[in-house]
Length: 494
Ligand code: HEM
Image (cartoon, rainbow, N blue to C red):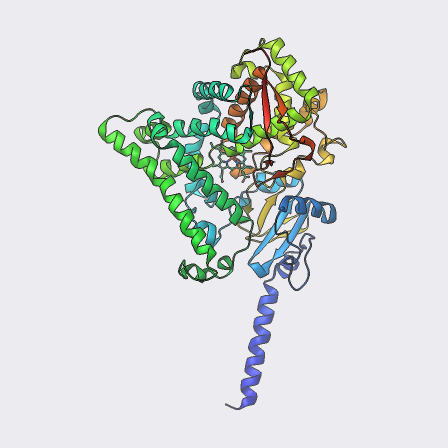
């Protein structure tokens, strides 16, 4: 073969692969579909690699809403992913809410495989396994089941009130300590909680924090999955060490409680819990029951504790609103009386304060990402298959087009006027969309309202000494004020 043939052959191959790659880029696919990609901070060579934030995604995504509008396309092809930020509630409800193809989750080598979280409900792809495990969760903490847990909630509310009375504390820690055991006891029973509850919650918290910080960074192993096989001691293989640590914790969370219950059932001394009931009813396979309940536990109630912390922050920040809650409680329930859930439902102002605090400081401002399983076109805009959908719930909850020009103000009254029925309901929207909406939302709302009502019936919530509340900043993928301490001043003596 002459050198000329060889050069011509190589050139043809390079041109052909160039044409093949070009025809497979999202923009060429968009053209083929008669649509265009949504706008975004992308440059033609590196996409959004240089503009994508290292931290504080929420703030940057919200700025990009101003620059690019309701749908922002982030081209991170160099890092192997593309992202679509949805800044409009209406579009999120249409895409993530109604279209089935928006219900997958991202799969990354580090989080799913190396960190051993592939089995958790929150990571499952849409399909029969997800539906079965969500069905189990519905049986445990759906609207009907949640009402059966009130006796346990009330017990823990009462000891929470005793613990914080007259004290200055970090409210998040006190609430996490109050709510975490409710979920462990419901899931695995009093005996397990007594023997292992505290340790399990400590591991769960560490693991969830590790997953949270890992998620907001790009990792070489996600680009080159073969790197997962380098040994843990290899220089620069931090991802392997994170993976090993998380796997150790994940295995304990997933298997130890069930082994404990199996043992107790074998000996005939198992106490009441959701796991024993589900196992005895044979309402699903043992593996599905285990994984659904483990997922429920691994959250540790931290989203609920953060949401209540945010409400306490609002009360300390806006004492005039707190006074109105006190007045309503004293008038309709009685001074110092801790209301039942049925009574709480008849307290319009308290419910408005809860909704407004969820709106004002959405607990999970970017939700949990969904992934599009098929290419799609919305309003002439092309959404590629595999694109990660980030619903900017935090912005939606402050969008002046929905809430008016006073959207940045804390104003519970907006949920009381004659037009309030037209407003979206934060007790639903802050919990996500469509087939992936939070299955724990009924339980979370019920727990939160009971902790809040009891606290405000008993105390005035004040900023702790030395805390300048107007200076506090909110952080975290489940956001809450950093370094917030508050004082719970008894209102009725004692
Ligand atoms: C105020 C408290 C809570 C908030 C704000 C919250 C919020 C959320 C959000 C935004 C999502 C993502 C939804 C989506 O992808 O569209 C989610 C998912 C989830 N939440 Fe919650 N949540 C809370 C409490 C709970 C509780 C108490 C439980 C369990 C008892 C729970 C269990 C789950 C599970 C299992 C998922 C994953 C669902 C799936 O991927 O299909 N959450 N939550």
